[in-house]
Length: 148
Image (cartoon, rainbow, N blue to C red; front, side, top):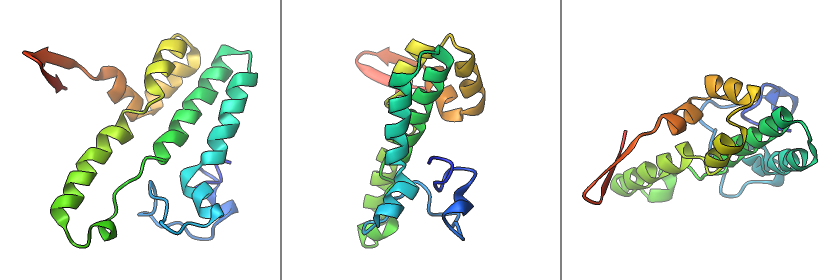
């Protein structure tokens, strides 16, 4: 299901055309198909089922990582038309979007539970968001947190 979504390698199985600017946005009046095509919610459910049914730690790591990829696609990306030409508000919203998008809610547990698997090494080498998450350094100075 993930591969037949906007983000997969087999998207042409369900769409004749794919815009380069549609990703990471579920249309406001999305049909059921569009919700799945852009939001991959059902795919995430199946990866979660696979995670719970699996016994091999690498398989479980792959399932968990794919849940993380699906969740990332569900973070709402602000769109220009939502702000009626108020570019300052759009800019504020977009700046708030990036931390949510990059700091996947599944990454802490993925690193903790599967960081010693072969699949983790594969995911780490192929996913820049995971590398950014793992490499993030936070320094606290007098109550002020700085992320690098």
